[in-house]
Amino acid sequence: MQFGIFSVSDITTDPTTGRTPTEAERIKAVLAIAKKAEEVGLDVFALGEHHNPPFFSSSPTTTLAHIAARTTTLQLSTATTLITTNDPVKIAEDYAMLQHLSDGRVDLMMGRGNTGPVYPWFGQDIRNGIELAVENYALLRRLWREDVVDWSGKYRTPLQGFTSTPRPLDGVPPFVWHGSIRSPQIAEQAAYYGDGFFHNHIFWPPEHTQRMVEFYRRRFEHYGHGAADQAIVGLGGQVFMRKNSQDAVNEFRPYFDNAPVYGHGPSLEEFSTETPLTVGSPQQVIERTLGFRDYVGDYQRQLFLVDHAGLPLKTVLEQLDLLGEEVVPVLRKEFAALKPAHVPDAPTHASLVAAAGGAKDATVYAAGDDVTGQAREEAEEVEVR
Amino acid sequence: MTTRTLAVVSAGLSVPSSTRLLADRLTAATVVALRERGIETTVEVVELREHARDLADNLVTGFPNTALRAAIETVTGADGLIAVTPIFSASYSGLFKTFFDVLDMDSLTEKPTLLGATAGTARHSLALEFALRPLFAYLRAAVVATAVFAASEDWAGGDGVSRALNERIRRAAAELADSIAGLPTAPPDDALQGPFGGTPSFEELLRGN
Image: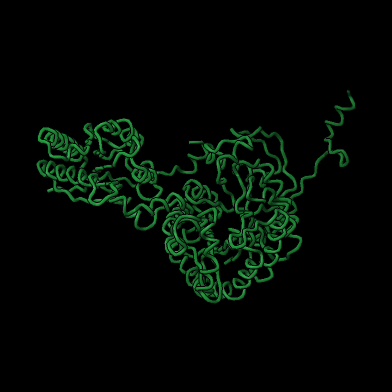
C-alpha cells in the first residue's frame, strides 16, 4: 500500500498570527514539504492544479519536475489534473515529459475542477464538465498509446497525423486515477478503463465514500478488469496530530474554525464525528485510518492533506515527522497483514513495464530534417516556391 | 388495512407556534380522510427549528449531518407531505426554504403534497400561490389544488371565520388523501434502483448521452 500526502496549494492566512505567506514563500514551502515526505519514508506526493487565487499551482508539471530532480524514490502525482479545461494534447505532452524527467515516478489523478468560472477562462463551459472529461480523456489515452493519431471530436480542433512527443517512457503511459466526490459517471469512467478511483474522503461522511467506491468496484468487475476487490482504490483523508490528543485539538481548532472549506459551520468535534477528519494522537490516527478499510475494502493508496488552512511550514514538517515515524510504519504493517494475496498493489511504472512485457523505446523518428523540424514534403514545397 | 406514512414539515419558530397548530390540524384531518379511504397513517413530524443549526452547517459543508439526514429521509421516504411555513417578509421563511434547498432535486418528484402557511394578516395569503407553489413545482411535487392559509384572525374564534378555515382544511386534507390513496400499492420493482442506479453506462457516456 502507498502512503503519501497531497497539497491543494492554497495560500491562506494563518489565523493564529494573522500573517499570510507570499506566493514565493508558499511555493518554497511546498517544495520543502515534498522533499520531507520522501525523507520520512512516504511514497507519494500529489499536487493540485488551480487557476485562481488563493492557489499557486497553475503549472503542476513545472513544480513536480523540480521535485523529481530533488528526490529519488518519491512517486509524483496530481490532485487533480483538470481533464476538462486542459487541452488533452498538452496533458499528454507535459506528463510524458515529466515521466522521462522523473524516471517513471509519475501518475496522474484526473478531476473536473471545482468552480464554474475556471471553465470559460479556457474556452469551456461547466455544463459540459462530464462530457469534456469523457471526450478529453479518451483522446489523451490514444495520444499516449498510438504513435500517430487521427481524431475528431466535439470540444477540440481535429487532429490529423498527430504525434505527441515525447512518447511515454519505455512505451508505457503513466497510470491514471480518476477523482470524484459525488459524480458516479466518473467512477463509471474509471471502472470502464480499469483505471484507479480516488475519493477525496475529506468533506463528506464515510457512507458517501463507501457508496461511490462500491459502485466503482462493481462496475470495474462488470467491465472485466478483475474481481471487485481487485479494483484500484485511493482515499484522501485529513489528520492533525500531537503526542497528546488534547494538544492537537487545541492547536488545530483555530485553523479548522477559519478554514475556507469548512470554517464557520459545524464545530471541530461535530465535523470529526460526521467525516473522517481525525485530530488527535498518532494512535488515534492509526485506529481511524485502519477503520477506512472496513467500508471501502482493501485499498491501494492513502493520501493525507496536511498543509492547508494556513498551517505554518514548521507545523506541517512536524506532522510529516509524526506520519513517517509513528503512523505510516504501523499502517503499512497492519494493512499488509490484512490484505489477501489476490488484491493487487497500486500500479507503478515498474509494474506497468513488466505487465507490458518489458521496456520498449517508443521514440518516433520523423522523416524531416533535424534542424528545422520540417518534414521532407514541406521542405520541397518551400523550394518550389 | 393499508398503511401510509405522512411527513409533516413545520417551520414555526415559537412554542407553541401557529404554524405547528395549522400543521397539526391539517395532519389530523388528513389522517381522518385517509381512514375513510381504508388507509391507516403513520405520521412523522419534522420541526425545522430543531434543525436550524444543522441546516446552516449543511450550507457550509455541503452534506447533512446525522440528525438532519434522518429528518431528510423522513420527508423523502414518506408517501405524502404536509409542509407549513410562517410568511416572513412576503414569502416563506428562510429556514423553510433552506430545508428544501438541501434536498436532492429529484427527491420530492410526484410526492403528494399539501401546502400551508400562517401570518399575522390575511393580506399575505397569496404567498402560498406566488412563493410556495412555484418552489414545489420546481421540485416536481404533486401539490394538491387547495393550499391552506391561516391568519391570526382565523384562530380568534369568530364563528364565520374559523368555520371557513375548517372547511379549507377539510377540503385540502381530502385532496391530499385522494392523492396518497391513488399511489401504486408497491414500489416498482426496478433492478436499477439503489445508489447510482440511474448512472448511464460508459458506452452511453462516450456517445454523449
